[in-house]
Every structure is written in structure tokens, then in C-alpha cells.
Length: 206
Image (cartoon, rainbow, N blue to C red; front, side, top):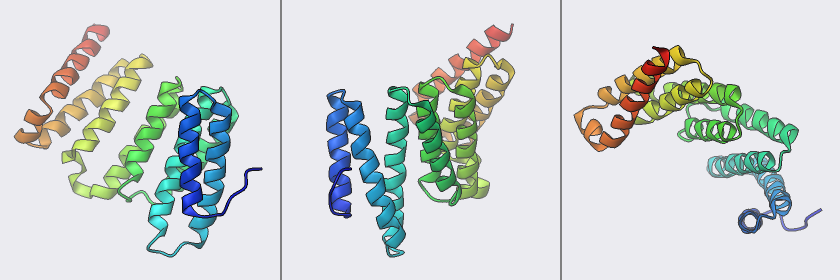
């Protein structure tokens, strides 16, 4: 059992130590520090003042996400799955929060990196639901929406679900166009890549 005061400073120190251990490929030690940080942050979150709670909650969610990734790296799949479900449940309590859709998307990226494509799709769709909840009628002209749609499309392509991939690529293109001419100019390279990916799917279908 690791010791230390239950303060934010101690939690952040544990997170920094974990980063150092990860750089040295000492992943078991990294996990221990992150688990300690989660314990501290969870305790602080429960007792935090309303004004402070969002900051603590965000840091705790990010730390859980880090833990998911490391557990997958060291092939602790049951632990990773349990933490994924825990983080999902936490995020679902506040879909409209400014960070929820980003964390769902990042969690999807983490899971996809370790080849669990079906779960990654589910997480991307929850990210999409979150951004829709936050931006309401303007979510289809929000740049982040296109990024999530592209993630869904590319993951469906990896699963050989070509029609679904094509459908989501087309949705992503429409969102970028909805964002206006300035957005298309700013994202010219990504738009070019997106069109190339869409063409690749058409060729695969043919």
C-alpha cells in the first residue's frame, strides 16, 4: 500500500511518477501510482466544494483513461474492461459537459489502438451523442463532430463494414461543408485525406 496525504498535490505527484515509470517501461510501477492517484482523487471528489468538483472530476477521468491504456499494454484485459465501464458510467452522468465528448472519443481511440473495434465504435457513438447533447441544433456544423464521424467511418472500414464506413465518411464531409468556407480552407489537407479515404471505400465496394 502506497502512503501519502490525500491531497491534490499528492495525486499529481503520483501521476508525474507514473509518467516517469512509463518512460522507463516500468508499467507495473506506473499502474500502482495511477491507482493511488485515483484513490486520492476519488476521495477528494466526494468531499469537494461544488466549484472545485469539475476540476477534480476531469482529472480523475483522465487518470482512469490512462489506467485503461496501461492495463491494455500489459494485457490485463479484465482490469481494462472494468475501468472502461467505470469511466463510461461516469461520463454518461454529464453528457453535456465540455469535456465528455472528448473523453469518450479518446477512450474510443485507446480501445481501437488495442484492436477492440466493436467497443471503439460504441464509444465513438457515445461521443457523438454527447456532442449532440452539448451543441443541440448546431452540432452538425461543429468541427469536432466531423472528427468523431471520421473515427467511426475509419473503424467501420477496419471492420470491413464498407457501406457503414461510406455512410459516415459522407456525414463527415457534410459537417465540414456545414462549418463554412473558412473551415474548409483551414482543413484542406484533412478534407483531401477524407476524400481519398472515401474513394478507397468506393473502390473496395466495387
